[in-house]
Every structure is written in structure tokens, then in C-alpha cells.
Amino acid sequence: MAFGLFKKSEKKKEPVGPHYHELTVKDIVKETKDSISLHFEHPASGKLNYKSGQFLTLITTVDGKEVRRAYSICSSPFIDDHLTVMVKRVDNGLMSNWIPDHLKKGDKMKVLEPMGQFTTEYAQDKKRHLVMFAGGSGITPIMSLMKSLISQEPDSICSLIYANRDIDSIIFKNELDKWQTEFEGRVHVIHILDNAPMNWQGYSGLLNKEMLEKLFERIPDWGLDKTTYLMCGPEGMMKNVDTLLTEHHIPKEKIFKESFVTGVIDKDKKDEQKAAVKSGNTAHEVTVRYDGQEYKFVVEPNRAILETALDLGIDLPYSCQSGLCTACRGRALSGKVKLDEEEGLSQSERAEGYVLTCVGHPITDDVVIEIG
Image 1 (cartoon, rainbow, N blue to C red):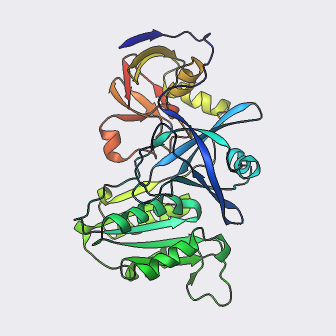
Image 2: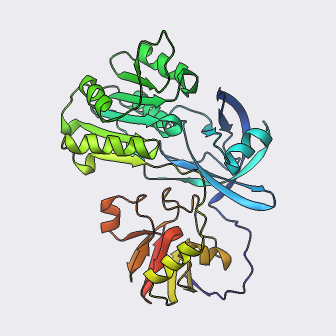
Image 3: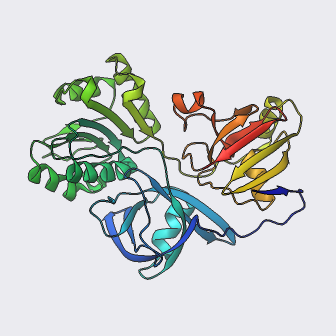
């Protein structure tokens, strides 16, 4: 194992190595007026391994600066020959607007290997019920999970409650409609629209507590032992679903969440002061073990572990830099790390010592983090 001692003056290096790939855009498909699907060819070196529900980190240069964003994979490793992510425009979104405006079929794009914990294992002999809640672009990882369930578990079923602004905003609507017909009894989709057209036969309005209660009664009851609950969407929707499941006494270990963020958190002076207070206004040395290397460096009180490592040219994995995507997740083998944001980690992960380096600040001198 190599040992590296880094100084703050070292120049940041261009990321290279086995964790990065260059993918060719096979096709770009318009899904709605503000969303597209990017279909990538697998690299020449071989098919990329990934699990349903994971995400792909896209890397490009915008205005001379490297930008990374995580996009959930909507293809299935079991049935799709290509790797697909969905990109939806958001107001002031750097990557989400650059991609549809500039990326073309045949272009190449640098990506970080697939990551993410919003996954499940499949088996032909399983018989279970996946109950899913999605809002807007939150359908992306759900599509991957549903595709795999349909193809790999013939005795399992899935129920999806999917909320959107209007009928034209429903991403993958045709495919979902097709599945309901083709796999009747196994795929159940309930659409909710904020603004429904006059001839709309489904539910309309906000996906609030009262509506969720009504919809919950329509979902087949397979019992707790055979049912798993998954959610992905806007923060407000996720909180409402969380409250509903809590009131129905659904155990936390049966609930899985995926949070989306629209960009990198900007750290202002207030954030820096808060971080400094948390770490006791003291710099601490950190040891990070990753990819067969060991790095030791000092983290100042107003800086995160990842931020410091990147400035020193240490190529650690990351994507959102907001503490939600978990691409930077590592396990603290010793020492104490204070996190600005813990939403990306489950209760069991926190109990096992996992931390997020992008929002993590060492508060002792004996911090050792192992990544991967």
C-alpha cells in the first residue's frame, strides 16, 4: 500500500484510472418538452456492471470548469443492451441545460462508474410486492427497478403512485401504460396530476396526506413480510410519504429513499463559520484509504474532507457534493467526523460508521476513512 503526504500547494490533477470511463452517445430521445433520455454505448473494454436503481455521474467542462452531476439510470442490466439516463431541465441548472443544448449523437462523455445504494437484489423464486412513490424526474431509478422486477421475478408485483405537474410532464407515460396492459395484475400505476385536463379520469391535486391515505387503500396488501416501500421525488412529497408510512407502522428497514439534488451547495461565509465551530476551530489530520492508496492530509476547520483532498490532487469519488448522492461515502475506521448533512445515509449506515466526505469535517486527529 502506497503512502502519500500532501501539501496544500500541490496542483490539482486530472482524474484518471479504472473508475472513469468514456462513453459514446448512441441516441438522444425526447421524453417530454423538458426531458430527454441519453442512451450510451458500453465502453469497448466491456459492459459496465451496474445495479437497477444506481446512478451514473456525468462529467464535462462548462465555461472552463469541470462539472459533475449524478443522473439515475433508467435502463435495466438484465434486458437493455445500452446504458440510459434521463436528464430534465431545471431552472439555472448548469449540467441539465448544457446537455440538451450541446450534446449530440456520437459525442463522447466522461463518466464515473455506476454507484448508489437505492437498489435491490433479484431472484426468480422471489414473491414480493414493491410499492413505489415517484414525483417528476424521480421516476428514473424507479423505471430501472420496475423493468428488472418484471423480467426477473415472475411471481412479484409492483404498485406505483406517480405525481406530475400535468399530463404532458409524465415521463415514460407510454411505457408505463404498455406495462399495465402487458403485465396486467403485476403492474399497477396510479397517476396524480397537479393540473388535470377536463377529460382526466384519474386523481388530481397535490399529493398531500389526505390523498395519500386514499391511494394507500387502493394498493394490494401482501403483508409486511412481502412488501418493500421505495420513494424518489421532491422533498415535500418524500416527507408526506414518510409520514404516511410511519402512521401505518411500516418499519424503517422496509423503506428505501433516493434524494435528488439540482446542484452543488455553495459555501458562503456563514457555512464556513458553522463548520469551523463544529470542528472546534482546529485543523485535523485525516487518513483516507482508497483504491489501494493511503493518503494523509490536514483538513482546515472551515473545509470538508473531500474539498481538501481534491485541491491536493487526490482523486476521490464524488458527484453531488451536497451529501445526498453517497458517491463519496466511506467508512470511518477510527476518529470522529461531523456531517453537515446526513440525509444520504440510512440509520444502519450511520451506525456502522459510514460518513460522507463531501460534507464531513474531522473533529479528532485520529480519523481514518476507508472508501470502496
